[in-house]
Amino acid sequence: MSKNMEKVVIFGAERYGAQALQEIGKDKVFCFLDNDKNKWGTEYFNLPVYGINAYKEKFGQYPIYTTS
Image 1 (cartoon, rainbow, N blue to C red):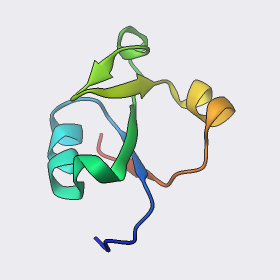
Image 2: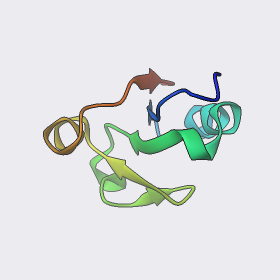
Image 3: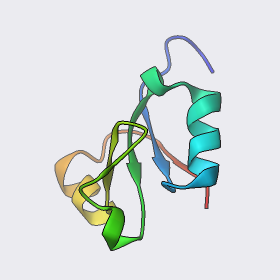
């Protein structure tokens, strides 16, 4: 990934999301998205987890990487 790359969002706060985080680098990740309502409002690797609708309403500006 380019050093000048903007932040991204990872869809999937689970094993594959953790792998993506490791590949991308935590400094390049804004947050995680997940379909599991139980994860919304929590943190995964110290990054916030949102549902897709809440993310789109509040932010919606970063590219989303889908892992699941």
